[in-house]
Image (cartoon, rainbow, N blue to C red; front, side, top):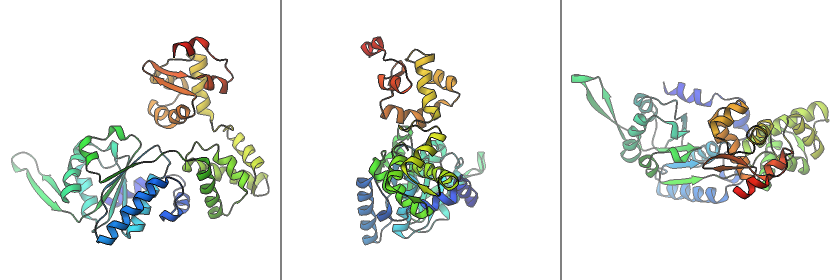
Length: 338
């Protein structure tokens, strides 16, 4: 049962290559300096005491390194790690199967922990605090509770929507850290390292061109690097320069500001179909043919961070910068209202 949950969670496209590019030690992890400093201290203190690492909650947008940090913590502590995700563990028995097979100090990594069923989450409370779990057997008059003793373990939860976590669960994490988008310089270093691992000939200008278009996200940067590598291999003598990166990314409809096709469709829909806004998320999602959650979690953070879009109580509103990006004139009336 446990092996199925773990393998299902890890069955992602380019899984082997993602693992190859993933740093395994804090010294190789670029960016998020304050968080890695705290985690390094956290690990050193636990190892010096011969103690189990406290539970850790990692939050932030997708692709910033939450899973990577979980693997690094396991490597630095010298323990095993089991991985699953919140939606997969939908019964208390599933959770019991995961926890009872763990040895002292092992790490259970739960991705998207905010999507875990509330009934399962409640079983986590005693497991995290007292390292026991009570399982109900049978129903009705024959129902009885069986207490299972667990080896002390570390739960690492990752979430892209920390506001959806319940207060009782959040309070049981000894450390909480939020990952933020990366600076361009850090992304250049990440891409340079990935290029060496992939044995790609890329100069500094090529790395800079990719870094400025990957939305502050290492996962996106590594994905773009692989596609640019394919382009360079076929059309540019297997060398990535600024010009080659620009041509490859233009072919993928990623402009020099990092906007992809869906970003542009969202901005154009707000301007040309809804008069610049405000427009509700549901209407916008129908207009561009995308799920509301995907727009809210994947596309909007970047558009808002870059100043192309605003969230207001009435709905989404495009800014003058967003209008400029899609070739529409500024809206003076809208500016006065905002």
